[in-house]
Image 1 (cartoon, helix red, strand yellow):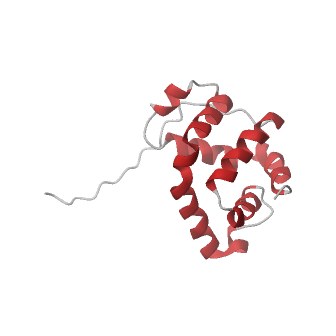
Image 2: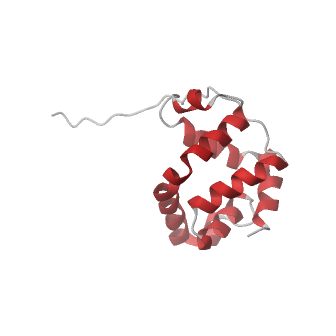
Length: 128
């Protein structure tokens, strides 16, 4: 078998738009964060996404733990995550599930990094 490297240079198409988070989104976000992150990691995650801490502040080992926790626990929030993304995007769950590979993590990243959501995550981080 040929072991040629594959280089992807295309930007992924974004077949969605996301609304800013609202107060009603607090409950599904808390459910998802509580299931995905062990207690000791949830406060670090919330500190990073709220902008109160930088990745440098929490250190490389904590980032590694966060990434490991997310990967290990995402299956625990499959239904909740798709329902939340459906609500935020206005797209049916079935449509999101059938989007191009990698769309779901990109949607999550877009929500977390959206400046309009900084206040939401800032207040959420105060609960930890």
